[in-house]
Image: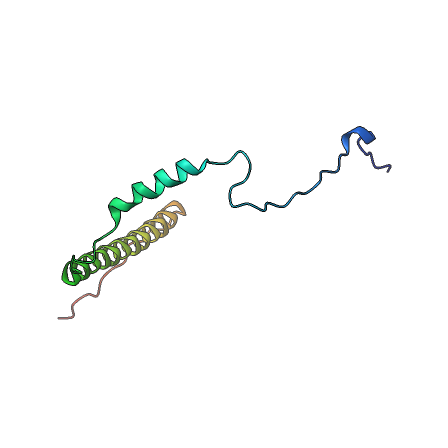
Length: 109
């Protein structure tokens, strides 16, 4: 079998000259004034050195975030296990079996 190649002309192939950037701001980039304005906007998030570090509040926030993550993980695992059990029971019923339900231990008398 003959392979087919697309017809191409020499006009389609062009070699571009690579010019490395030497300045921090490439041509056509953001002007220096915009960069200074962005830096001034970030100053409102800086803390002064006079403010004490609220270690207790930060640790409580970390503890709350950790508890939320653990609870979310536990709920996800429980949900995945219950979905798997429901699917297993549904497959059992759809196969026509009658012994799909689990019988808990029967007390002996």
